[in-house]
Image (tube, rainbow, N blue to C red; front, side):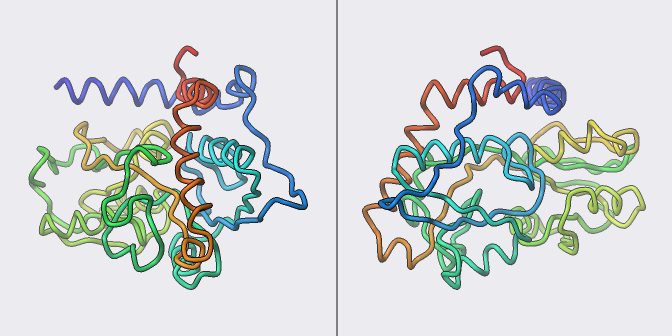
Length: 273
């Protein structure tokens, strides 16, 4: 019950804070994207075309962008951001068509796509942020999760296409439906009875449980997983500019731990600065 109370309290704080994200700029102005100079290198980064608040939005707002813009200024580089479907973003990373992708949780097979800070043992200190996966069920459903086992699952469990949680669900011996790209699509399938449950990111869970679907859904309080999320760089980027790649990852750690960024994060999460 302590886990449930803690998570529910976080949901209430974040749910209320989503409408207050502009307050962050009043407390500590987010860093503007760095402008190119003769000496600065332009580095292209792709991200999923979806709102995952408070981390990022489709139009380039949120804490992930604040963090990366601050890194760019420190390192005298320019990040060029490209929004696209997640599977395409990962495919372009693998093909070295972009220099990096964010925000990416660790899966061993994703090392074929690009490089994590720390390689096969990702350095969590160099993460961009930590987020959770939560399970949603239709109101009145008996589907449950005790931290080890899924019970009373009478159908497929939904997950977004290309998301790492799909592998975890398969390891729990349930049928996985990965035919949706957005969390709201999963919510509609769940309400229509086409899914027994849906695994969504913590930020998406907050949004869904604060919106029009909330009256028909329940969130199982115990997180399905908690993971660090990284900027991963293309193999070509790391091979051609190994020192700069290391500096970018180190700068992410330094900026994330800075008082300026932490002030932004507290404000975006609805906490007192």
